[in-house]
Length: 179
Image (cartoon, rainbow, N blue to C red; front, side):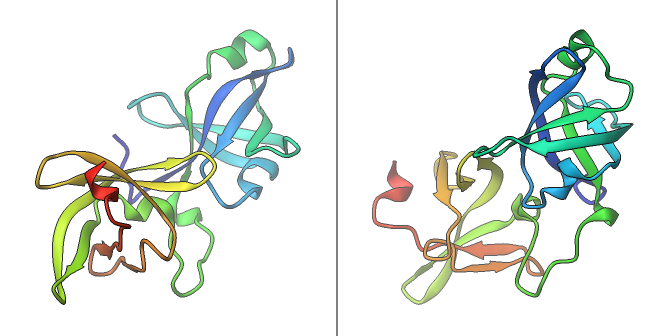
């Protein structure tokens, strides 16, 4: 496990691309420059300690949420193939400054989940993960039955996120928590 106070996962290497050592990266970040701008990044295989690597170039695949990047010292398809499923990390001290009311998605993990019932906030679970394919989904584990439910991370369903007090509130449509 990585220390989320020190590291932020920004991408996942999904496959190699071509024969010159390029890799295809699924972005887990709203900041494209993480895959376009040369500089230091960190790679992590499963739960091993992160290792430093230089990103030398990158471009976004047209119409997709994936990037093709070139990493220093990775020059063949076989070398690139070895990096499949590695996470791309940045140190949290390199995070872009956010505006008031904005936060990094990783900050949502382990927040308590509350709902408003009879004009009182009731704790119903906690955020245990994020799904980030085409839209952002919170994976919430419900305390009453340990069931995992996916909640769309949209203002109408998640009206309040309070990072400082370690909770968020949800307003789920009828039946969403029963799936």
